[in-house]
Amino acid sequence: MNKFLCCTLVLLDIFVKWTVQETAPPKHPYYDRRSRRQLMCDQCPAGTYVQKPCTVTSQTVCAPCPEGYYEDDWNFDDECFYCNAVCQELQFVSQECTSTQKRICECVEGRYFEIEYCAKHRKCPPGFGVVEKGTPWTDTVCERCPEGYFSNEFSTSAPCRKVEPRSGDAKQDNVWHGEETNKSDQQCEIDVTLCEEAFFRFAVPTKLTPDWLNSLTDSLPGKNITTEALQKIKQRHSPQEQTFQLLKLWKQQNKDHSVVMKIIQDIDLCENSVLKQIGHLRVTPEQLNMLMENLPGEKVGKEETERIMKVCQSTEQIPKLLNLWRIKNRDQDSIKGLMYGLKHLKAYHFPKTTLQGLRKVIKSLRSATMQKLYQKLFLEMLGNQAHLVKGKSV
Image: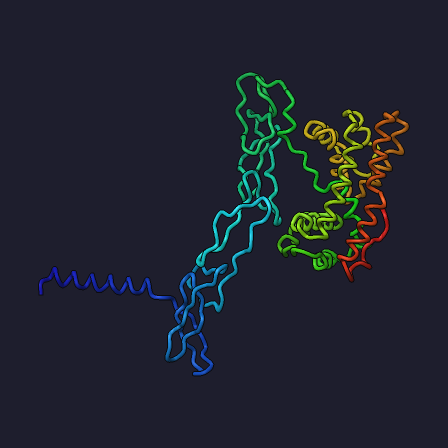
């Protein structure tokens, strides 16, 4: 036989064997009870599942995944995986569910997925530049500007820029003279609002037990908080704050639930009342510092107070200060802290109108409405866990 033809046939044979081997289904060990033998069954390809495993006399029978289910690889599963039902608020479908792929949801531009909620990307403050832009899955990464570089804005994308040869520092270069950045472009994120705190605090037990958060999670109606989200809350927050964060997440995830809708409605009414009282107050930096100095416990530093004045709108400044103070002092009660501070501010000739406005804020937060709302809705919601919580007003 012609040598060339012989070599060609050998190569062709190798190629055919290789192709068959590559496309042949992988095997899966399976014990056949009827024959009492360990068999090696063919797996099913993506988009299908095992309807009947192989036997001594028959091959594996595969069936296509039903609508809303998928298998993305060879498998020996007796049913397909379920595609997640729908994307959540502030998300869109980046990959639709098919028989061979699951549905993938992504947060809209400017937000990232954090504990089952699309949170806003952080803005790096003046003196810090962006080293990693936020993605739909990660937050912005900021880094302090090194010597010779500066940043004079709040931004989710701007890195530190090189200082021109003339004088400049980490927050300005030679052509920037410290003009105040537009407040609408800045962030003043208040973790838990005063009204949310006033309501959520009813749910915090007098004595926190190790399994309290799990018990509360199991008692809440509507969409369940995942174990992963619960673990993140436990890792990032102190015990009492964990209850606030859990309830805030539950409220965000269950906006269409009848109980939650009522809670949101009443908290919104409280927020409007507080904003009405605080809205007309024009607190100066000195007054904000004075208020801070008269709160008990660990103080919020002057630098932080100055940043609050710069970043926050007038209606947000006092709530933000109390928010930071509460967290610094291991879950102190913002309302009681404000009451304590007002008692001492009289001696400093604090403006009467400001004192009156803050008293009205306290009155709104301690109103019987908040307590009735808790007793009517929350106690019913907690069921047999109700005896663990405080049923008295703050």
